[in-house]
Picture 1 (tube, helix red, strand yellow):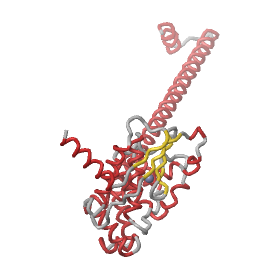
Picture 2: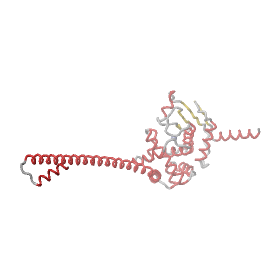
Picture 3: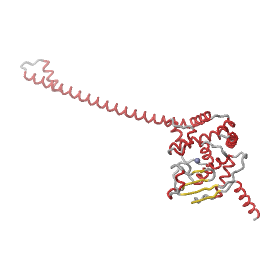
Picture 4: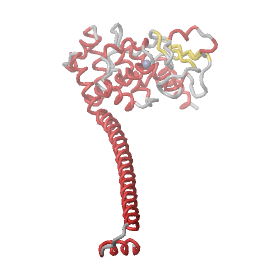
Length: 319
Ligand SMILES: [Zn+2]
């Protein structure tokens, strides 16, 4: 009993030290404030280097239905599954059709990651690709095929500059999907090359330099143009081969269609020639028969008969 009381006290203090979560509206059955506080703590630990005390402000997580005409509906793009508003509010529509993520817990965790990042960065505005890429990485599963989107963008040459992703809320769904994929690839590049621990270092350096790219320069000695180029190179090396297969696959289909068309045209031409040859032979045979018939008639009408005529006559009869 005593141990149980201590456990509850520890849990309560832990929740208090990371701020509480206040759920409003129609919370899905698998979500409660303890689950969300646990996720908030996990994310804070992943991106914090202990240089900033955890933000203890309470967070409101509001679940609502768009069809009920809630005011929050106008705050999200049509493809949005949730939103982080400022540093204290998360909104999640329960009747949206988002392209990203599949469960409400993942959507809420994604939005909590935005809250944690905004709080950890203090007054520094982090670029949207950094926000989205980390929120995707920290909330787990991705609900669409990144390979398809990126290989198609490579084929059509439609990869976008990372800076343009800041305007993603105004994008239509396909461009928004591409923006999220590129964001994910950019953050994955950072984590694969330098480990997850590079993230709190970049955020801390950005805070001390007063801007994000200053932080990137301090930690990685990398300017925006160099990082952009590294991200494109990483995407190309990972997905260009898939695009190449798709490309050559189409070329093979084209070659097969050309072969079939050629085969049937040759076959039709040969059949036409055979018909013409058969008709020519038939005409020649007819002409020969007519000539022979004329000779017979001439022989019968003549008074003298030579040995040759008799032979021809016999020959004609024996045929
Ligand atoms: Zn997001």
